[in-house]
Amino acid sequence: MSHDQAAAPLFLDAGEAALVVEFGRTVDPAISDRVLALDAALAADPPDGLRELVPTYRSLMIHYDPLRLDRARLIALVEERLVAPATRGRAAALWTIPCCYEPPHGEDLAEMAALMGHAASEAASIHASALYRVYMYGFSPGFTYLGGLPEAIAISRRTKPRPPHESKAVLVGGGLSAIASFAMPTGWYVVGRTPERLYAPERTSAFLFEPGDSLRFEPIDAATFSALDARAEAGEVVARRQAS
Amino acid sequence: MTAALSLRSVGPGVTVQDGGRHGFLRYGVTGAGPMDPFAHAVANRALGNPTDCAAVEVSLGGIDVTVEGGPVTVAIAGGDFQVTIDGQTLPAAVAARLEPGASLRVRAGPSGVWSYLAVAGGLDLPQVLGSSATHARTGMGGLDGRMLQAGDRLPVGMAMSEIATGRIVAPLLERPAESIRVLLGPQDDYFAPDQIAAFLAGPWTISMRGDRMACFLEGPRLSHKLGFNIPSDGVAMGAIQVPGEGLPIVLMADRQSTGGYPKIATVIGVDLGRLAQARPGTTIAFRAVSHTEAVRARAEEQSFLSSGIAIEPLTRSVFSSEFLLGLNLVDGWIDAQGRG
Image (cartoon, chains in turn blue, brown):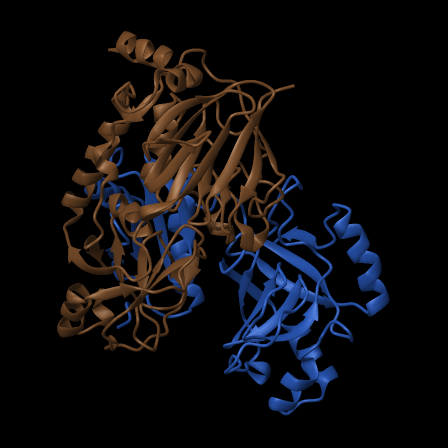
């Protein structure tokens, strides 16, 4: 089923201490906007007993303490804030993030490009030409799901996972792009690597992006990657941010 | 020198856990925290600690500990483990004072999978994103982000001076696993009514494959009405996802923050520990309850934890007076009376 954009959301229990407010069942920027508006409205003035908000593509998971915040009261609060949605706590930012598509970093670029009928350099240009939307984090700390992958390289995921990639890998698969902060096996294709650290617990901002931010990849060569990588590992933020 | 636990021998899968890492699920950071949150809280509360103090989560692999730098009062609670101090057997749920050099041994016993070793004052370890809970897969928290090993030293925080010792009276720790309560959803509408019925009836056998991330179940294969791929959404601890092959997986403390399979039901908060303590091979079934019933059970557990946990002195009929004196349990008996 799918709800039209203005339809009332569904309230689904994920146990007695988490409520899912579901706005739809598809990956869609309009649905994501509604999720993020509610996320911001609740974060701006959190009721007592609210524990954590987890925005995803099409729903907001609200973790709460049901002994301090009654379920019916929580639903009433959500409905109130849907009627008068607050503006976002922080304006969506536009990020420019360096990405090296060259060997040895874009390990699967040629394989992906061949499957989609392109030369490797062409596939890299297509990937770097798009404006992406940060839909959500998930999977591992700092793992960022990005919408907006051009159709020409919108490849499905692999049928079997490939061996672990490096940290900070830039991926495509399942019609999306992603940035993986940790080295792990994946069912996605590794098309490049960014020197930026999407998870840096000792840095003032351990995570850079908020869901709803926009992002562009800026192609860099392997030498630039090495230089920026050294700076990023020393604690510097090498991605550039501007309010959009 | 501040007091510390010195680990002499450590089985696989033993970690430091506090109440969990909160506030970063939205950035993909797993909460971690104890597999049996209630037992972890009981061990801490028995010592007068806040319920979320960092403690050692002991697996079936067991642990041998001595203390350095001063006496340390410890509390142990969880599964029915074998607990000995210098060779003398103690109850599985116990608070005891360890003098420097005394040797504490915690080993798998008749039942249960996890036992919590809390210390008065809590373990004093650096925090990552506000917590010292270990998430070994991402190398976060605890001691260098990893499972504990022999030779490790865990510093102990400042404790209050008088702490009762003896058997921890916590009947709620006895939780047979045959029936696990769940709330249906959030994606129960991906399953036809007969599949929901099959899910509840089981019976399910807990697989050997389980770890801190998930509990795998073996039994009838469930089929989906609306397919088995959904756009990833939030995953609560206790969420029961059903992937394409149809065997349910209960996602536990080290689960990922989001997931892309339909979740047929979610284990209620107070039954998370009940499930976590069930050994591989145990047969279980699920029982659907209302939100109200789940909250009532949670309130009961909360009231038990906040009312102060009774510590019953170990009697001389069980232990030699020499041994009791050695453990300062007699002092503990006086403390317990004094606390009334």
